[in-house]
Amino acid sequence: MTQAPTPRVFSGIQPSGHLTLGNYLGALKRFAERQDQGVETVYCLVDLHAITVWQDPDALRQQTREAAAAFMAAGIDPQRSILFNQSQVPAHAELAWLLNCVARLGWMNRMTQFKDKAGKNSEAVSLGLYAYPALMAADILAYHATHVPVGEDQKQHVELTRDIAAKFNHDYGVDFFPLPEPVIEGPATRVMSLRDGSKKMSKSDPSDASRINLTDDADTIAQKFRKARTDAEPLPGDMDALKDRPEARNLVNIYAALANEAPADVLARFEGQGFGSFKPALADVAVSVLGPISGRMAEFLADPAEIDRILGQGAEKAEGISSPITARTREIMGMILSR
Image (cartoon, rainbow, N blue to C red):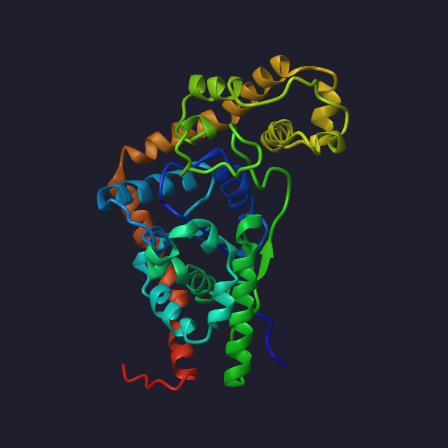
């Protein structure tokens, strides 16, 4: 009988710009909660993914440290989780190449995120951007991860990872790679722009007013919510009535997620009120939650050498898991292991 894989969660975030409220609600908050659920948690700052588009080297180093500070300020404990940056662990790049030789070109051509990011200029983007999903598969499979917390926009990549793992197992007649499950849960896992409720809140949006950065101070947070795009209608009593009001729905979902309440309960409290009343209340909740996080981030960032030490220690732990898995992959594929 095949032994069931060890339950293990893997997820990562690109250190390419300030992390946002969307990153906190959709990822960091969930990551911290998973530390108490009895499974091993591996969290990665995916700097190899970041360089699929050009990055200023000094900025990338600073953003990697800032992302690590955000993880820890949000509650990720390096003693209970493995926290590291991707480029320090060779298994990610090595396994990505091995899996590039398993993945099919047709599968890659179906990846909608590449089409969105490349736009009309697909001939000019890097090969790395095109191969991004295979590197993500390597990130996951290098740890035999069983569960991958992701946003809806990344679910297709986890499904590709399952296809690659299944093909590898089939082609080589082994039951080696587990088929990881995407984990998408809870309100506000997809936080939308404060300026356009049809677009995801993004750290790459040219407008800083479109997002709440985890480094924003209380006055900035309140001002951004006051200026957030809404409509003139009062809040209804149920979420169905917000179906065609994306900006209103977004703010209600954000309030609910920050306050750990159901969106329906938020609407029950604010039914009939306009955004002149709702926005200040939302700002108060946001400041009460995010203020301590930005404060802890500042403390961590005051000691970059300590952040580097923590990431290095995490990389050693990550390599202890991923190196044997990668070596076994090479062996299965027929490569001689002489060292």
